[in-house]
Amino acid sequence: MKTCPNVTTTTMVYSGQAAGGHYQHTGSGEYICLPNDPEYDNYNQINDNARSLMYGAEYETGQNPPALGNLYENDVPCSVCLARGKTTLMTPGRTSCFNGWTKEYQGYLMGEYHGYQGKGYVCMDKNAEALHSSYADLNGALFYNVEGRCGTLKCPPYIEGAELACVVCSKST
Image (cartoon, rainbow, N blue to C red; front, side, top):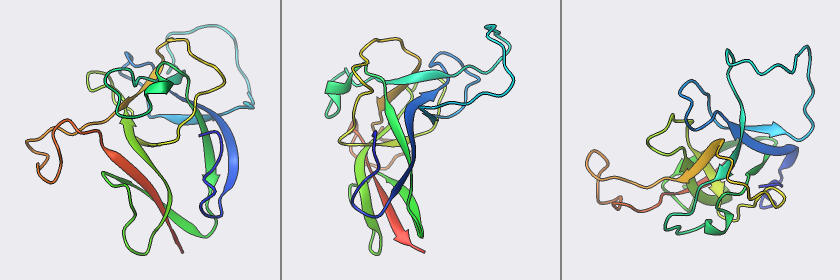
């Protein structure tokens, strides 16, 4: 999202663009939110393959999307928010918070395609947005819906092939 949830008192630290390693690169790190106003220290503008490489992220929601299909191939905005005096928790597989917790937002669990290098999981707001008319299909870091596979994942209660929801909750500390 380009903004912070207004359900509770949150303050935006910064907004930016979601990014991560290229989907085909095995040495990359996790998804991050790069600020819109970067600052640099010492640098050169020589492309050097002996580096870790950072790419912008885009939505990959085109195959039978239960949600967020309208964002397919768009770049992903992000914001970093501060919830003062609160602890926040992302709970995968739920749309509501446990007792004593307050919902900040709910959405869909997203991550890298299972055949690519993993970058962790994020809870993408169900009202996710695109980054300023950015449909380009450049395939840097990619966000895919996450669905369950039965076996070691117990079904029930989980459902084979169902896209997993998530919720971000807070609790006053």
